[in-house]
Image 1 (spheres, one colour):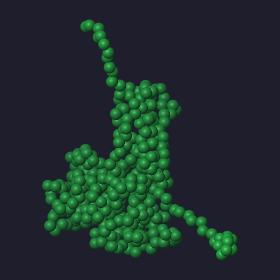
Image 2 (tube, one colour):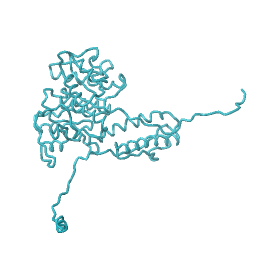
Image 3 (cartoon, one colour):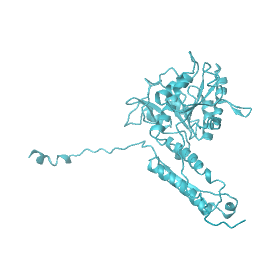
Length: 380
């Protein structure tokens, strides 16, 4: 073979990679509606809906079940992307729970478990989960399990005839992925408040960001509450204050109706705020997806530098947008032995500070006579 005469160009692909934002406003909705169009919404199948009005038109002339009221309540807040799973109706409550919870049949998920297959079948992962009007204790417990796998949040009702009962109900949960809501609205649909929470959460993600909590944003379409909730902005010794202290989100009437409460059911303080949980979930997925291209590349110092800069570049962007306070990724030698590195195993540490909601404000008020000091000058 003759010797090459000229210039050979090698295209190098080293360097940091951009990390793309993930879609967080996608609602995963489990409903019943035997009158719905079976071709558009086959049972136990995750269906991608990009126009909620289209879905509302397919519930049947005399719709049954929870699908229509849930979609109506969501549509009052936002026109989101949804993954809808329709399950069959059953008059027996226990049987209905089993249908909603679902199972694995011939390798395919049914009921709520079908949400786990949404990304593989539709290309989109739901991040905001709920089964309005169907969220019994057993259903909510299963929803939390699914949310952990999807890195999503569940919004469900705190079941109870009064605030005290709602707090007792909440005591049975310790999941960071769950926010409980009490009371419902005065709408005839039991799941109306939860459906509105799903829609409002999606709207906040789109308009403000996933680091803004559900709390203190006016919602649309509510005319009253199922149970009265007394509230005082400067006094926590109210029903609203008691519920919030017990990590239950409530609904107050203050310049309209709005959810009031930032807390999840987490048993660890780091994840008590909804914003901290969602920030952690977003970073896990964004960083993992952003580093996908580095997998199986030669493990050397340049690769590590590129990966660190990829993560830190994303942190700088999120900080500039106000979505986090700050964050940093670093390589620590004590976590990376030569044996592990030779085996293709690398550990990168990163830490971040999420934005906390300004939940409590203290105003120091004093009475003083010092402003009389210049009265003579003013009268001159």
